[in-house]
Length: 457
Image 1 (cartoon, helix red, strand yellow):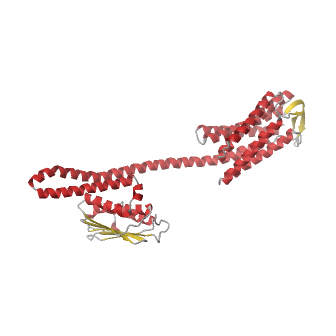
Image 2 (cartoon, helix red, strand yellow):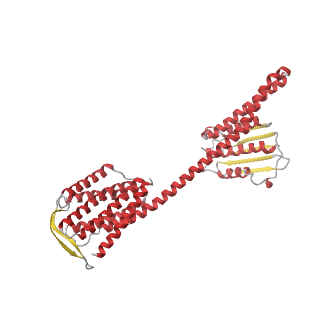
Image 3 (cartoon, one colour):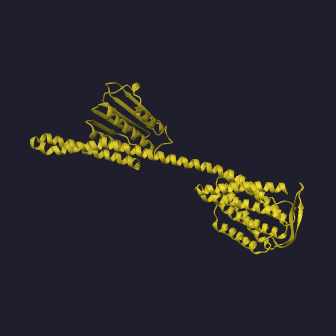
């Protein structure tokens, strides 16, 4: 009997290794419950194979009964753990049905332990032997079957119906490959278990094959879980990377807002404080100049207020969806008129109900263009207009500044390229014209007829 015991020992070793590996995976909290149940099933398989080896080595009835009772008890443990594993794997969890199956297995386990000869036989007279085709022989009991054995068949039947219905449920949910993999492994296992029941009933005289069905289950599902685990690890790493990038983006945005506050509101408020401090003294000497200071103070204050509103909108993007594009652009121009010695003309003749995506692009391009005017143009006059009809909207931003040659933009100055990319993202056309000493003009146009996918909100 060297061949069959060697093969069974190899199968037991593989099952033991896979079981311990998945318990370790569960310990490090990677799909803990799923891997724990699968690992427990694998350990139960290893235990049942070792018990079967002891059964094949039995020399007398007592040794055979002890080995048989151990084999049956470990098999019930496998049935319980597998029911929970299938439930977790397929995400099909009829808890009451699973508890009924577990209760049946526990009753079988209790009867098997209490009965002197186990649940399968009520009496064993002696051991005979079965000659196998390759020349080896194995012990075979001669006795009377226990009527309570039907309880085990009921538990097995309920579990079979449950696991295949769970596979069907998973398949209908769209996880076809996973369902077919589980269904195949269980079909092989159940076929071998049915073969063993025929051996127990004396219909077939051959070795038990369930352990090899167990082996197919271990190998197929281990490979499947390994694939799922690798995907889960990759997803976990992607989530960590996304979180890292999110934190970087938040930090960059905070720095940008802090810079904008310093460049705009903070400097404007400093100027307001300086003027307000000087006004009482100026008023005593020259009320007319003081009156001009009050007007400038009002303009600066309104500009600072508009700038704060812009920053609040950027902190709460829903603000873009709530406001019309014309109102947002007027708020932007009002803010820069308070920040620089600029005469800004804003004309809004058309204000279509645009989608948030289109509105955001127009807002960002306007914001970038106005910031460039303040930083680089040395302009005194700025004109911003928004016009169009029911299907098209056109934004024009021009200044009388120093201008530049668009072909000679220094490396690292990405503002214009970013504005073009933003325009392309919504299917808008972006045109910039500028000449040294003659100012700059930007024209951004978008048509709802051309961009039906973005369209009206």
